[in-house]
Image (cartoon, rainbow over all chains, first blue to last red; front, side, top):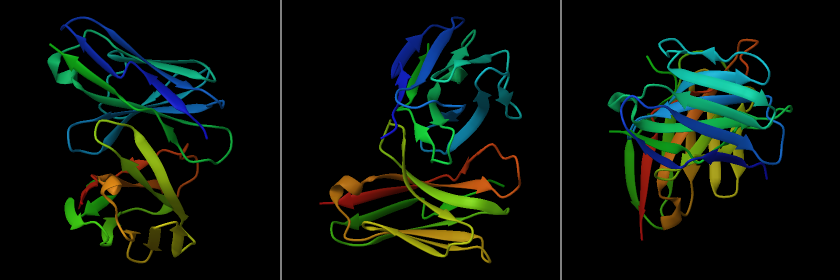
Length: 115
Length: 114
C-alpha cells in the first residue's frame, strides 16, 4: 500500500533555532500534501496545504514566515519551523494524496520539543 | 464550533464487547472518514462513507451516516486489546474545490481491556 515517510520522528532543539521536517511519499506521486499540528489529546489542526510546484496555502492564524513549506517535487514536502519557541512544541503530521481519489496517507508524525 | 465532534471522548470496554463511537458535523459534506491513531503515531485510514451512502462495512467495522442529522457512528465489533487507540472522524466539505481538505474531530480514546 501507499507509504508516507516522515522524518525525523523526534527532535529536540533550542529556542531560536530552525528545524526542518521532511515528508516523502515513497511509492506514489503526491500532488498535494497537508501539514497538521496536534496538541496532546487533541485533534489535528490543518496548518497548510502544499501543492507541488506552487506556494503553500496556509490556514487562518498560521504564520507563513514561521512555518515555511516547500513542495519541490511530487514525492517530497518539507516544513521548516523557523526561530522555534517553546510554544511551538507539538506533534506535527503530514499527509499526502495521489492523483486519484484515494484516501489520505499519513506520515508517523514528528514530535518537536523546543527547550 | 469545530466540525466533527466525536462522543464519547473516552470509552473503556472489555475484550469481546462492541464499541460505538459517534460523530456529529455541522456543514454539508462530500464524504466522512474514520481514522485510527495509536499513541504518538500517524493516522491510519479505516473507512470512507460517501454522502449518498447510509451504511458501510469493513471487517469488524460498521459505519453509518445520517445526513439529515449530520451524524455518523463507528461500530467495532468483538473488540480486541489491539483496537486500543484514538479514533477520529474527518469530513470532506461538499463544496467544490475543497482540494480534499479534511476537518478532524477531537477524537474518541478507546481502551480495550484484556
